[in-house]
Length: 111
Length: 111
Image 1 (cartoon, helix red, strand yellow):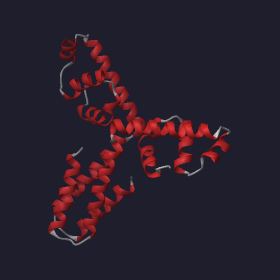
Image 2 (spheres, each protein chain N blue to C red):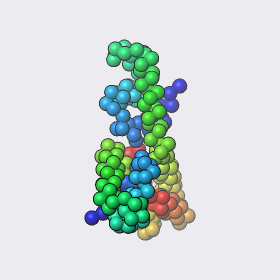
Image 3 (cartoon, one colour):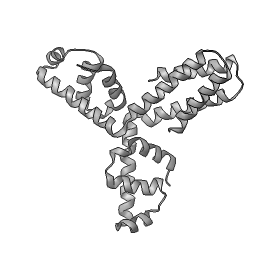
């Protein structure tokens, strides 16, 4: 099964390291939600060929993430910022402001 | 002249895509602030060899950034979070909280 969220995050970060051909097929499958069969027909290649290409792109993108962990780092930050958003949306008091400051400081310390 | 800040950011993001040998020399030059001559002596290679290796690493790391712009994206976020920190540190009032919320929301929208 495709894990669209994870794949699209990986593609968003590292997609530019794929070839144009790889990008087109991967985008059609992951972002535009075409089936393997539809892509195969459109490109005039075998369904198996499309399948292999998608798997290969998955491996390449996952390989970059295993080395660089940048999706992971961004995801952690996003989670922290989501919490800041929640706090800024709730009661305005010293406790919440202090927590916002602590989270923001932590993000800065991690870069 | 070395731009240590920029190079160390690039290295922090993409350094794991260099070989072990490249990493060692680049770290010595950029992060540990050894001179080309010192590194050459320690490794038993020519000063020119070290120089070429550092330039090559610079090109590789800059090449990844030109394609992926992830240092740029992180830097923008860091700037935004620094502003949140400042706001959380100043007067607690609706205006500042609204600005915190707006900035946090913008960060989330960009991912």
